[in-house]
Picture 1: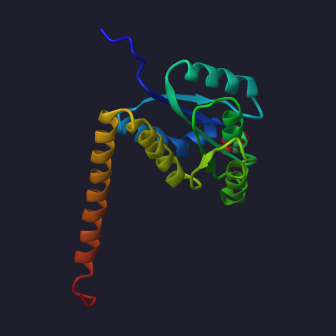
Picture 2 (picture 1 turned 30 degrees about the vertical axis):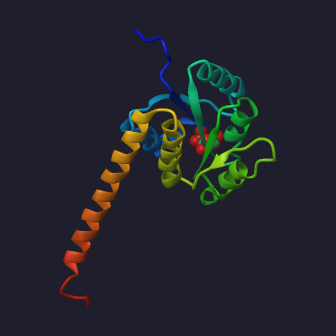
Picture 3 (picture 1 turned 90 degrees about the vertical axis):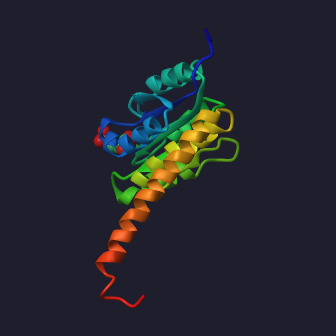
Length: 174
Ligand code: RP5
């Protein structure tokens, strides 16, 4: 029996209030068949817990951290300061339409990169896909899952587009 650890992704959120948006990230990782650890730990409120989670994840073949926070969003930057594993940041809306979190996440100093996604749900989903793409380079099964996922989501969009086209077929010029 193989004792090799399964590659995983660690999703960190600054607050329980972030879960509503980040469940889209977690659902996407699960749909892609990626082992996922989910923890709530705040760079400001519980910084020791953030360090503990980074250490534990890095002992478990963690291939990417996804760190999501709102307001003065320092979580992704803090994670990047404590690991060599790639960090994907997701800025979340709390105030200022998430612009505060976007700037806090994206404006990292040279030498400490964070791959910053879009604000909110789109960023949450893209964070999962980007993490999967990182893993896919060494795991053919994940590459296969990604291809199927993208084909399915595009087929769903095409079906909806066809329904809209059909609804207006008599009203607009072709
Ligand atoms: C951030 O502050 C969290 O990531 C959250 O997005 C925001 C608000 O947190 P709560 O006051 O709802 O716990 O640290």
